Length: 414
Ligand code: ATP
Ligand code: MG
Image (cartoon, rainbow, N blue to C red; front, side, top):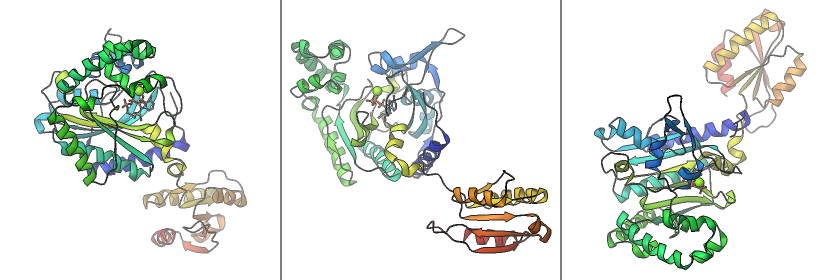
């Protein structure tokens, strides 16, 4: 599990601000659910035969002996909250969430045991339009954060019936080649054969090139649906690739499945994963509720955004002072400038003016305000321009009366 240090949090805040604005423009509302849920929720909502439930969850009994789990993902919790509070009585829900998730995995770049997701859930929408809109919200958000070289891959998992027929065909095919499969895949044949299509094992991957394709088992209705999604994406100018091997790791997906990947992430290539989960809410005891959503891994997003998102904002003003009376005035001015929306840093060192100036320079502030005993006695302050907006050095100096706060602020904004 990883600390986020001050040098990193600024980038996170920027991404979260972009998310907030982007999602509210799309009419989404935020939902916040607890980090701990009853284990049962994930057994039912994710499926016992998935990697997440089988190998990755942090499970414990609480003091009342109730089986609990640190949430490994957000969708099941959101679905639970929607049902528990009857939110569907107010109509279909367009929601987003953010926060830490927990999976016991082998930590490496872009893979942690506590990681963070930002996710979107459209609950109660069956139309293909919602699939296209949900995908476009992810695509445009990542673009707005400044990411490029992204690839959108889409697939259709068909309806439950399509998938059940395909599963049997795939099982037969795999069983005939049992000895050539890696151990993990051998284990999965009976419990979760679709997941084998997603195998990262090189020789299994090669073997699978010849495997039956889910695409060939889609009903006419499912095919028409998938074709229309492609038409809508074309219409939105969102480029995509069809990947017939793309299955999501979780059991409740049907029809649309998609991933957004980047070649700059090494083997942890997927930054966004999502799909349609028409079966989840009924699985949890609710009504049949067609739904679609996605989750983006924040750590991977931040890796891709790179240094430009991590650059900290330098202060507008650095306040330098010396002497007892100057000190109080400096604190006052600092607070007043902050109220006027100026980022203001106050020196606390009490060291010589020249040392404080050096620190002001280092902070990359545009302006320094200087208050010494001399200034206090005259009711004045000195302002020095350290650099302009293009970061070129400036050395203009101005003297203002301290009571002319508005003039001071106007000069600083300039
Ligand atoms: P992967 O194949 O990389 O394990 P996944 O299919 O398990 O991904 P999802 O459950 O779809 O991932 O989660 C959505 C996104 O959350 C992923 O695309 C990824 O960006 C991020 N994510 C998932 N697990 C981790 C992790 N352990 N550490 C960091 N990010 C993660
Ligand atoms: Mg995983």
